[in-house]
Image (cartoon, rainbow, N blue to C red; front, side, top):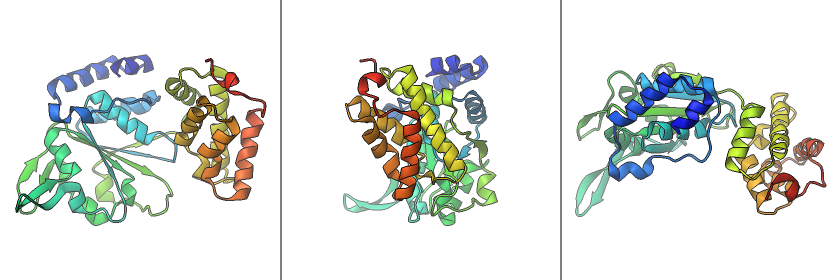
Length: 304
């Protein structure tokens, strides 16, 4: 993936420092399978340089942005580029401190400690992705304050106090306006370097589509990307909700088309039907039909 960073125009000194980081912190064989090999690449030079610089400086980062800005793809990319095992924590209302750090369990006739993802990542120098951090309960995140700041420790009640492995980093993500989300408190935000994720550009979206589906025609990728950006504009103008603004849905639809499914049916399944409001579905279909002809067939989309 370092070659991709060079192609993107990332400063060579940063790429060299990443290579040195990987050399200095080899991954334990037991956790090598956790190092991601991303199938999708995030295209955005400025965001890459911000994130890489922060991580090399020992900072944890918070990726903030609207839906479909590529936050999770980018988090996976970062773990892959730095060659670190990755642990994912998806927050929900019932997530507590024990789920993050670990808890007692009964094994082989005795009580033992079962480590959680944060504890294990801290021990092994992993990257922990804290997904939808603004859905977490305050008491759950409070236990991480000493982990995320200058102390870089985890104090497990009844057990030991451990120092974080020097390669350990935390990458948090958060969307705006989802049901169940809340404002993050200042104490938590102060422990992250915050990166504002921009909306994906037409050029970057075309690259992403062509990278995942090498057989797609460039013109078809451009039209499908334009459909997505049209929906994004409608969403910004409050003409439709953000339910249909689904990048995963778009990419999944293209996969269905490649398997031979009708283009409109595929886009219905991946995008239109994500909204359950009939009027909104009509607006979405109109936006799709304004770009893509009903006569479009698989041979018009793929070279093979």
